Image (cartoon, rainbow, N blue to C red; front, top):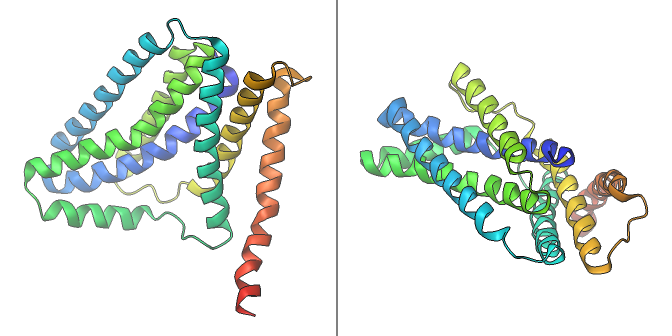
Length: 239
């Protein structure tokens, strides 16, 4: 079991599943809960097949340092994207993600199409949002081989979102998505930095795995320090 990966996987998956649930909820108002949940289940089944195939194919015969380097670069790219967007939203340069707006847009799109088109929207929404979860599960699992626990963290997040969403049957607007993306973005960038430099330069971390905590604090504090600086730039430009 890869304990350091469980929290970022759970939080990342939770954010993605909230967005997927919003799409499925909007579709359900047109074609019913049975059909929309069946479409979501088909999307999840596709993700499960991809995970199983990837676990069998990529873990055979590959050099550990190559795997570590590829995973590290991927996590850096993924984490930097999340962290940069979270910083921009907190600084007011980008609007916060609005689940209500996404719900209304999806419902408007669904209302213009037929039954199968609506079913495909629910399927594709679940699949596309889940692909980011799948990519992270694969990245962490190829390094640690903790396929069961990592997939379990993603499924646990899915269960929490599913139960919460069905209990209120409304967009989960109160989820602090930007805060989660800020924290998880810093975590994922930390993992990417740790594994990429470790693959390139060998044992460069004298504190071992404890270095991850120091890196996470560094990126969290650094990201927060950037917010007021970025927020002040439009004011200086206007002046």
